[in-house]
Length: 170
Image 1 (cartoon, rainbow, N blue to C red):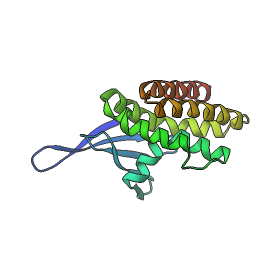
Image 2 (cartoon, one colour):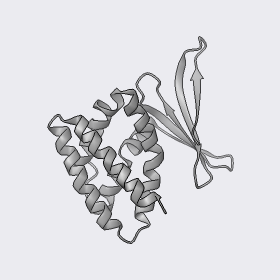
Image 3 (cartoon, one colour):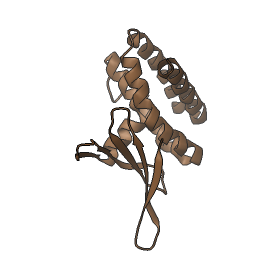
Image 4 (spheres, rainbow, N blue to C red):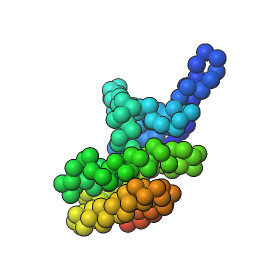
C-alpha cells in the first residue's frame, strides 16, 4: 500500500509530494514528486539496515517513465537512445504528465513496471515477450511522431495492462 505525505515550506505551501511503499524485497521506497508539474524530483530507497540510497531527478525520471522500454531495448541489444525511447520520453513529458489522470497513471506505472520487468526476465519465453513489446513500442513511436499522442498513450497503457496480466497473475 502506498502512503502519500507532503513536504511544506515555512508558509505551509506544499513543496513536495512523497509516495512511500514497502517493496517485496523488504526495502522502503519513497518517490518525490513536484506538486506543480507532477515530475519526479528524485527517490530514496531505505535498505532496512539504516542505509538509504538517494537517486537524482534524472535517475528517477529515466527509470520510471521508461522502465519497460529500457528493459526491452537492453534485452534485445538495441541502443538506449533509440527512436522508441525518445518517443516514450516525448509522450511522457508532453502528453501523459499534462493531465491529472496521466500523472496518476505515471505514479502507478512507476510502482508496477519494475515488477513486470522482473517477472518477464524470469520467464523462459522472455525474448519472445520482449520482441512483442518492441513491436508495440514501434507502433507507439509512430503515433507520437505523427502527433497522435493520445493514441500512443492508450496503446502503451494497453501494453502495460497486458504485460501485467500475463506476468503478475499466478
